[in-house]
Image (cartoon, rainbow, N blue to C red; front, side, top):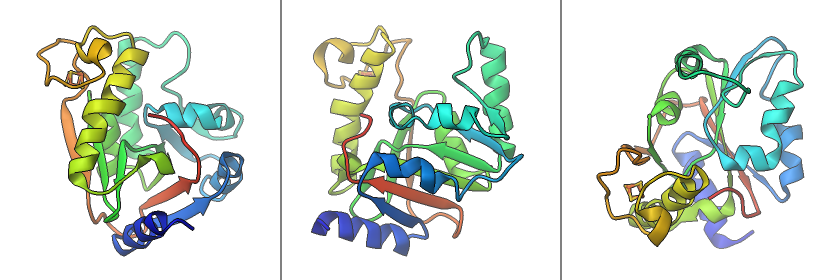
Length: 204
Ligand code: SF4
């Protein structure tokens, strides 16, 4: 295994986040089966990675209560209800914007529902990320979000923010700004956050 990946996994575990390393994205769903029981309440954070892995369709196929934020025809009130109910979920599945080699997770959120649930609420949090999300340190994590992840997401969502044109963050004053809450998860409660690291490029 790449020394950098090895170091990151060692430090995630030191920081109370058990880590699973998978070579291929096809191995993710079979591993997820170990985390989700029948009748569990399961929710997800907004994530390109989860869609690429087929996690959303997989959850829809299970005998669980899936708080499906991607269901068709949801109103803003429906979404608000899903985000609030997520705090009572058994399992919350999400990706992350960056994983620092020191075993910390860095995320920037618009509404904050994703980072809020990562920090508190659901009994188990499963973070799934490609190795492309590994960065050297917090400075590199901040750069990664400002000049890669956030502009890419703003473009995908067709927002009216300057970064959709420049691919760089200008700390904008746009009403459609998606960078509002900046969170570093360092050493969470033990046995709550699990990280699935996939040896592929996934998400932004
Ligand atoms: S703060 Fe504004 S310009 Fe910077 S990445 Fe976020 S949305 Fe784009």
